[in-house]
Amino acid sequence: MTPKQRKLAYELITNPPHGSDIAAAKEYGIDLTLLVENLDLTVTQRLRKLYSVATFLQKVRQGNGAGR
Amino acid sequence: MIPDPEKFLTILNRAAVEYVVIGGVAMVAHGSARATFDLDVCYNRSKENIEKLCRALERLHPRLRGAPKNLPFRFDPKTVAAGLNFTLATDSGDLDLLGEVAGLGFYHAVYKSSALRHVGKISCRVLSLDGLYRAKSAAGRDKDLEALKEIKGLKDLKERLGEE
Image 1 (spheres, rainbow over the protein chains, first blue to last red):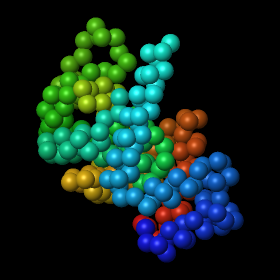
Image 2: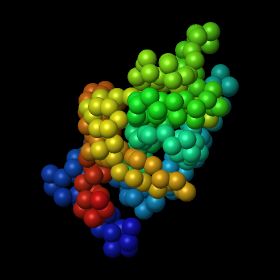
Image 3: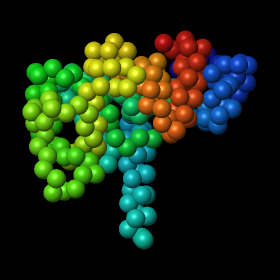
Image 4: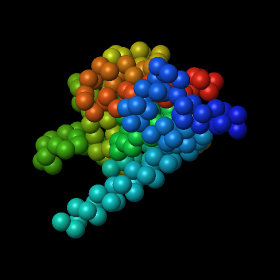
């Protein structure tokens, strides 16, 4: 994202246009800040982040299982 | 177990397998913040492609995920041709192979609703947000309601930012 797009993105998620899908997502409880963070990444970076987070979560799950 | 998407897709690409990335990994590729633990791909069910797919995955020892260990299963062209959708565990992670995607259809319809994306050093087809919306709507699961809201919000946001 360019600095201009980033600024617009934060404006859109802070005050979503009335009746928009952004507003509906926010009202539903979707964390729009996470979406903007991801849009600031390349597709490669998004998938590497997913792999890192999912691997970590899996280790946490396995750790919890082993402790029972 | 989550597969490393880049590694897995590299294996499929090297074997020239025709596939489209769908599901949670496709959502993340578009910017979704949802975590997923498997890789879903829709594959072309042509005889040639099934053979390539089986050859590519052979060394990862695909087996049916969640099935009893003594249940006989052989991942070969005959088995894949006789089936359609497979939920697999492999030595490199969990992989769902779909011959048909609810709401979209078979590989060629899914392909039409996809676009080329670059992941590291490789390129792959990834299902569009519209395609993901149709697929998740058709699946009709309660857990997809949140995903549907996120997809629509994400699409709206991207359009307003001039990103596709």
